[in-house]
Amino acid sequence: METFKFNLTGPTAMDLLLSRRSCPARAMTGPGPSAGQLADILQAGARVPDHGKLSPWRFIVFEGEGRGRFAEILKNVLSQDGMAARQVEEWLTRVTAAPVIIGVVSRAQESIKIPVWEQELSVGAACQNILIAAHAMGFVGNWLTEWYSYHPVVKQEIGLIPGERMAGFIYIGTPGQELQERARPDMSAIVTRF
Image 1: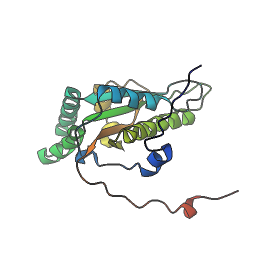
Image 2: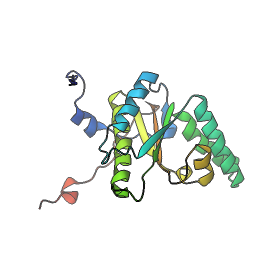
Image 3: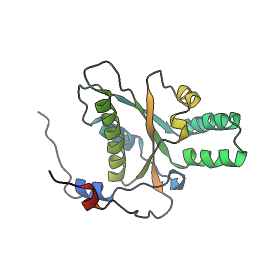
Image 4: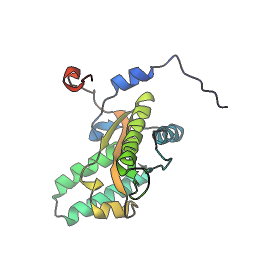
């Protein structure tokens, strides 16, 4: 039987959940997670509720030269679509600023016992766990979809197969600017009791 050890000296899980916030991807800088930290972040992403043990997600890691290859794919698609060079460069800044990008792919399947909706919720939970794990290690994250999550050429070039969809791209790095807190929902407006 596996025993668990808890770190009682660092921030609590509630501290992390209540303090997590996004940093714009284009405002990120290095350092990013080490190989060991990234492995732990991905492991955390895979430890989510998963009815039927389907693992209805997979991860594509873009780092180092991989970010450059991803940027080149986007540049080619944008250029073919007629976007001005200045606008192309603005988009490329986003995918080259953060040291690590994790593409989260939804592999939800129809025609099985587990509803697609439940599988997609598991994919979303994987994204949130990745963000919380990165935050726990002192990094910032930003979960974005953007146009390239849906573009058929981009999806094909990064290795998606028919039936797979991008849940989004999670950018991880160090903030290059001071993070600003944003307005949060008024809890009395979104909580009811039955």
